[in-house]
Image (cartoon, rainbow, N blue to C red; front, side, top):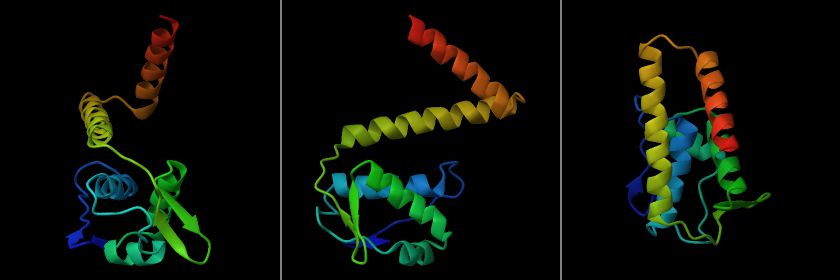
Length: 132
């Protein structure tokens, strides 16, 4: 996707899912003014072709963005940036959490922990935290 001269690039080695990178890029573009309220985004199909990714990947990103109120879709017309204010601090905070989780998962994998073990431990810890 190219918005006002800034092309979206994907980092397949980052560990961040492609759909999440699309979401983050749109949010950053809204936060820094590259995408204005009411501006139309490329169609799901067009963005999938432009990024060389599966249609469903972009569809998931757009759906998540719509659920978060960042965009709205008008059937037969397209997807548009909603009237929403996103601050840089919200984005930085979200990115930090993703970075921490990515690091945690990578280190856990190094020690041979599987996803079920990780989920069970996290669930137990979160439950205990909720009780405090």
